[in-house]
Image (cartoon, rainbow, N blue to C red; front, side, top):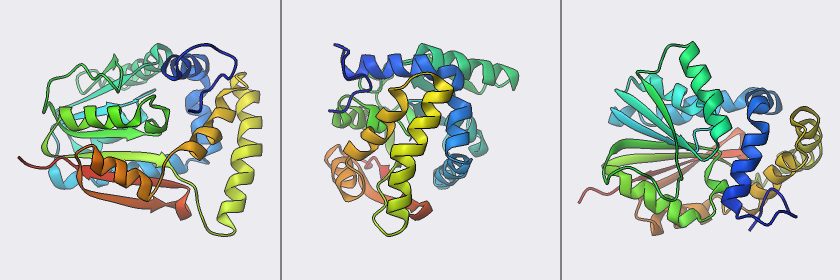
Length: 242
């Protein structure tokens, strides 16, 4: 298991919460700067995949500062609920939502993706952006998503992948293991956060491996959509109708 802080005697969950608390105020800038804004396009593409079911109630897991929750408003839902284990990330997200006067549309709560405090079949759709590789127990998190989404509801996961083809693979590895940690450390002042990112992506079971885990956790019609030459992927799963 890859953890952010190698010398800290805490669980992965506690370490991830600490890491995001440490970088919360710099997170949005670094996210958009280091991805050159491509992450916004990826989110928009992921949101469009939910248009067909016209979700009224959405849950955004590992919501962070609320970027995916805000993007989901394009679907014109009644409510978007976001949960995250980082109190500081949530504080930044609530500030953004308040500035846009969207408190009636989006509500953020501290919450654990592996122990979701909502009833069965509570949501029409679930979104997760760059969060599942941070789960301490991936299967448990996906099983919880399956529990709280309604039958026929969709789960859309946006996550980094490992590109396979030359020269994208070589450029990606150089950028991820050299450029990104350097600038991440310079701006965030947390030397571990942006070395953890490429390490956690490398350890994540992407592609067909993730689709198999998706299916084992109760989802059907699973599909992977590769983005930007395989740098990231959208994974779609549907909870079967009983």
